[in-house]
Length: 275
Image 1 (cartoon, one colour):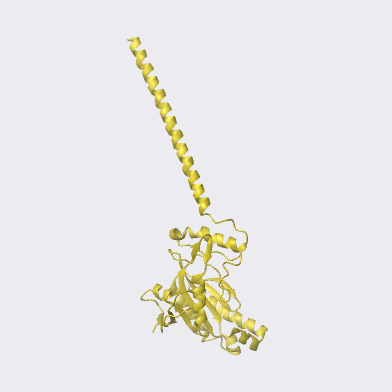
Image 2 (image 1 turned 90 degrees about the horizontal axis):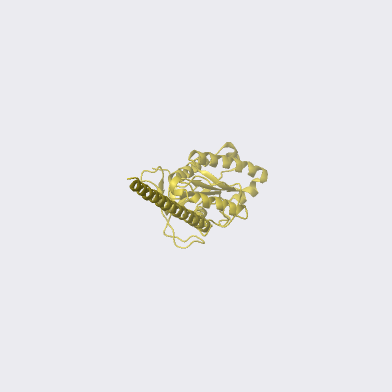
């Protein structure tokens, strides 16, 4: 009996040892697999990551790229900078911050404005008076932009570039600004009526190869170029983005027209208060 028990104990010990060896091998295999997965993920992250930023412009764009991956989760994207005069400059100032203005699909509405015949007005008024007029103009625009939750991306002289989260907010702000300027402040009334032209376009920021391309920014600026003083114009993309019960009307569509420097043809609408 003692011999049998000894044999059974020996067999059990061998089985336990074999099981320990198998478990250790499996753990080693799992650890190796985990290490390979981690290495592959690191390689993928390296491949997708843009080259290190070398200057303020590239650093600003780099922040946009890092933020773009969160668009679908948090509705966050970057807004690219430009002006009506210089539409090819992207995020040119270090202090410009990424703003939370995009819809969940990355779409943002861009609003450009400037004062009609500003150079002639400046020459007629003189620099000192012109600066005061600009301050009064800026107060009107910033008040309405803030009311409709817009974000001023950049100003250049009398020009504004503004981002809005939705097309209706941009249109309502623009209509309200024109209404305010038709009832000018005492300062503006004394020195002559200021007529502002505004253009609005809705579109996505496009990223490729670590760079951003400004077709939608350029398109918004081109729409503003078409406007006359006191007028708000919007692209067909804005009209398509508005709900049926939007508190603005889009009327008088143009025939399909070409916009300087942009491919294709576009329809532009005039934005007015609802009837």
